[in-house]
Image (cartoon, rainbow, N blue to C red; front, side, top):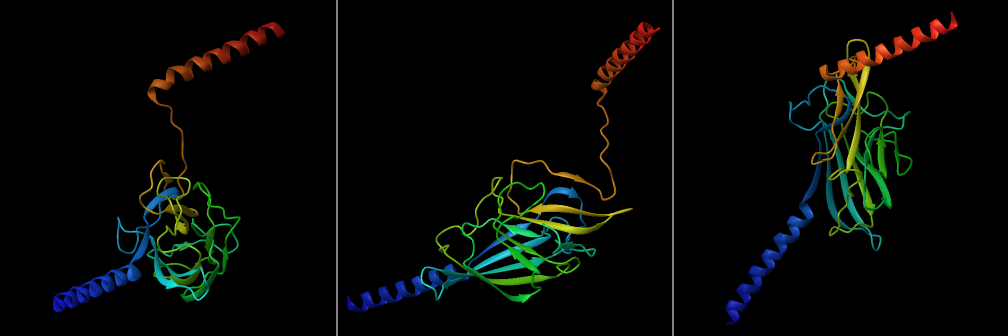
Length: 240
């Protein structure tokens, strides 16, 4: 019986150890693969259907500061055709909605953002409130660029690090710039996958949206024109 008990305890120890390992090593990946508004960018370097960007969050364990926890956020670019993210002199970049604003944050490796922000973040036409954003100068965070940041926060690993904002399943928004068209440079907002409740508003760079009346609307336009001309003619006769 003692031998059986020892064996059982050993098996439980191995099982618990593997569970802890999986919990520590697991990561949350946000794939920025949904175009929201703007002009169509070039396909990601991995091809159509793959994300333009990914944000990988890894839990590192309890922080040395009581009540805080350590995480690592890795932002990776798969942009192509010299396109880039954000610009340090504009209120745009790569934004996240977090359950709690980081207590501290430190750059670890890759391409450091020129600035970060936890308030006053604008994300163009993308709805929602964001409380962490990264800003790079033009042509800085581009093809194959990455940035790793160590984050200290009060968000426990048993809670959700990201918080939904604006639309169902939306946690992050990023601004791709440097999209080259016929006569101009364009941009587009992208968000992480799994969102719903919106209809993308997209055009090709350099193109303009022209509202063409539907066939069923043409008689109404003609009637309106007749009424306008009739009124103008009547007023002209009264003046005579």
